[in-house]
Length: 417
Image 1 (cartoon, rainbow, N blue to C red):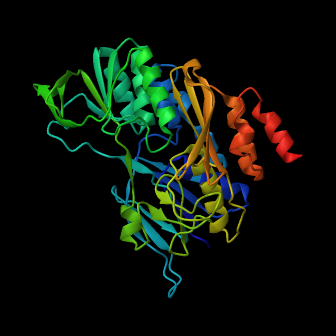
Image 2: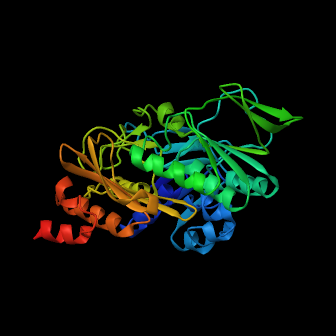
Image 3: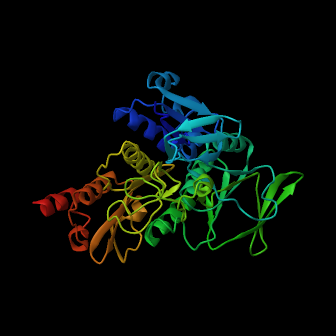
C-alpha cells in the first residue's frame, strides 16, 4: 500500500497541491503539515483588509474543517517538520518526515511548500516590544492590536507590504513615517515613474516618506520601542515600528536532504527539485521564467503559488502539464489599486498611458521593443488587455500604445486582426 504524499507547509501552495492531487484522481493518503496553529488561510488580506479591521480570522480560512475530512486530507497544524529522510530506492522503504513534537509521517512522495520568513532588521534594539513584522496571521493580529494604541507609527521598508500597512495605519488616523534605504519606493518591482507616483500619493494622504535613509538603532523606554535613530543621527518618535525589508525563502529542509538551492529551492518548469521524489512550490522556490523558460526567478504571488502547486501535483503523479503562464500581482494601498501583469525586470523602455497625477494610469514595459508587462494603477482595463496580449503572445509595440486616448482593447483588436 502506498504511503502517499506528505506536504510540508500548510500554505496556499500546500493546500493547492493537496486539492490538485484529489482533482487528478489520486486516492493515496495525503498529509498536510503546518507549523502554524491555524488551518490554511489567505495571506494577502493580512496587510490590507485585516489590518483595516474589515476582515476577521474566520473570513481568511480557505476551507471549512469538514472539507479536509471529506477529501481524505489529514491536516496537522502546529507541528514544524525538522527532519526528513527520503524514500530508499534500494529497499523500497518509504520516506519519513519527523516533527519537533515527535510525530513521524511516512511518505512515498514529498512536496515542500514551506514559504519564506521575514528578513530581520539587524540593528541594536530590534528585539524591543512594539517592533513587529508582518508575514503570518499571528503577526497581523499583533500589528492590528498595536495600531489600536499607537499614535506614532514608523514603517521601515518601502516595499508593497510596508506601503499597504502604512496606508492602513494612516486610514486609522495614525501618524505614519515610511523609511526606505533605497532612493525610491518598491524599486525592485516598478519603474521610477510608478515609484514617484506612490511617494507623492502617500504623502498627499498624510504619510511622511523618507528615501535614501537608513536606520542605525531602535531605542526604547523600558523594554518598549520609543524612537527610531536614522543614519544622519536624527530620530523619529515611535509607538510601533513595523519592519518590512523583504523575506528569505525557507530552504533548511531542502538543504538537509541535499536538494539544490540557490536563493530558494531550485525547481524546473514542472516544480520538480533535484530529487525525483520531491517537488516544491510557492515562495520557497526559484523557477524558470514562466513565459520564456529562461533563467531563474522567485515569484512572491498567490497566482504563481497556485499555478505552480497544480503543476507540482501533476508531477507527483508522473504527468507533465502546460506551464506557460503570465505572472500577475496586485497591491491595494488604501484606495490605490495596483495591478501588475508580466515581469518587467530588464526593461529598457517604458510607455506611460494617462496622467499619474489623476491617480489613474498605466506603465507598459519593453525590452528591445518586446512587451514585458504592465503596472496599472486604478486602471483595470489596461491591466486586463496587457495580460491577455501576453497570454496570446500578441505584440503591442510602444508606438501602438503611446496614445492613451485610444483604448488598449482597440489596439489589441487591431493587432490580433
